[in-house]
Image 1: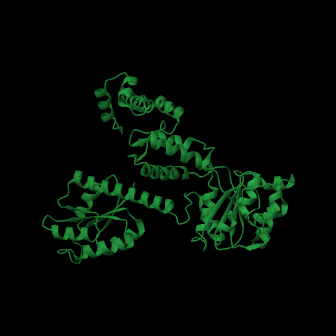
Image 2: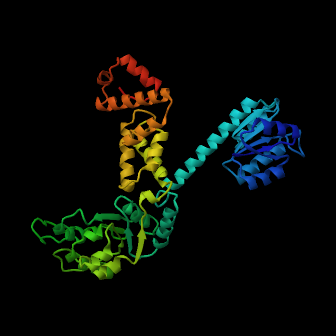
Image 3: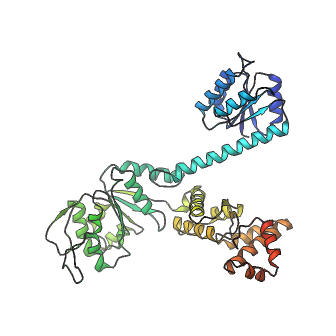
Length: 449
């Protein structure tokens, strides 16, 4: 049970509050000193505080002092001050000083339970929001709380201040570019350019000029001198994604750049000094490619001065829910949709899925679900988990629940098939428009006619 601290010098009131608030693990204190000790020891999320504490029971000075001290020690604690009927001014003073709410004696079991329950709910929501902000608002942008991601963040911050070349290994969609950008953001180069290039997406004949640039007249169509990606990243970080796909013929020139920090543009005669931090990534096994003579051994050792392994999403425990909630909030804001959360079946489906496409797959599913959902919650069906939706039906024996869920899903599917046209939606469902609107209101579905 949640810890609840009850601070009151009246033993009778203590017992009455403990009995009234039996859903919580109540800790009792009779004065400011014992209250502060209890806050330090038990770290309660909610405190009920009588302002009339000894040695100044007739005034509120000791209670207000206790309030201030509690909020200094634990600023997120919800403090509910309890006062007498004629002590409203002191209650308002306490609210101004940071108390969550106040309650006037005598104790009413139902009322005090509502106030305390609400305080715990607010405390839980605020704690979750702080966690989300701490993760999603991370200064280097790596989202997650799992041990593997904590280790990755630690390694990123350790190597960031150095000039060492890092090799990022991981499956497709695990966030290699995000990690490379994290190295950039954690370094003293963060105010300089971060330039990314995918070696697999550019034809072999163009990759050299794309990386190193070219001089005027270097080839047909080269009407003016142009900087390459390496020069564009001057002072900052160059991210070479899918370096395993770099042509063998170009690897020697890349190695020379990494060793000398100098380049020559295509068709040029002059060496250009560059100050660029390089981070590489691949989902291939470079050691096997070295053995097969498709990747230079000397370049392999040069780009892998330190190697960071990025775990797949299926091995990141609770991170999948944190990421899903982050993407939900992001896309709900971007597309101005009134979507607040995931339904229970959606959360269950997210946890059960293996995510072969990793974070990219999760991001795409959440993005499309925010666009497609017609309710305030994203369901398993919205995410495309049809099998899981059918399974949840089988597990429910409550006919009313099954009927309501089935009708909600049918309305959502028909609305999507009708491209948002309410007349067509009602025709597909075989009901009148007034009946359709009535069902939408009944199930609190968000539909824009």
